[in-house]
Image (cartoon, rainbow, N blue to C red; front, side, top):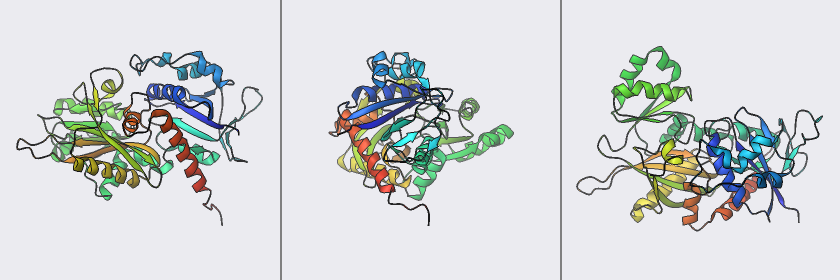
Length: 397
């Protein structure tokens, strides 16, 4: 019986390129080679697609370092980095699949190295813009290739924090107070926008680009002096800026809780985990560079709180029309002095969460009884299941 050909797609043009390399290194190390023929496919920072004529040769070229010493800003020690450095360029417009296997076919085939990449399923290990926002998913749809994770709509809504929050609100899920402004509005009248923000929200605030992840471009703002620079930073990453009121106020930190979701039409929730940041909040450095942050799995919650958070996570997954996998993040107010439990707010959903061996998504499933290699198997199964379900859809009269 022929092995499934699985394309592992990583890299990309986003600010989370380095995080993708770390995720891909873990997947390439853990995937079961007895079941799958693995095809590594990289996208450089300038958008070139590269692949190896000999996947095994490339994968053996540089062994991944231990997870802890890897730094997101220095991915040279990862096997995916080797693919990007010495792979052959592959130009890949979508071509509808003629048979069971989908194919990414080059514009020109004068170069013998530029052959069609024929795969049964693609496991995208991409984060951020051009990988998590529905764009690459549209390419897979046009090419007729099965792929893991959410479709075009789910990916796009899960990436845009403004639209995401609108969907959460329509599903009557509790979210923090926030406003959204455009980069053009800020540039036209920063004083007017500052007044608008301060009239609607109380400090401290969190300023975020609407379309990005891994806490890139996010700032915690304590007063007006910090507000302008934070908006300028976020505006460098997206045309929409989301400003949220901090949970817990000035004196207390919110608890940061996370749930992993797995499934298509019948999603399941993992145990709940908690992140205790080594810094003031769980920013990019706290996630990937410093060693002061700690994960508590399972989180110290009552059974009722755990069930509430898990159910909210599933409802968030469905409200954004997600599929395959997602990590759903929550903020919980500290308990009151009288001991009354704090309120729980849905923060955001991440449709392609970090997938390193030390990332929360695989750790949450490992704690729920699904180890890393089996999790990869399940994601591939879900991708094929969803692709097969789509074949029952008619696209013409």
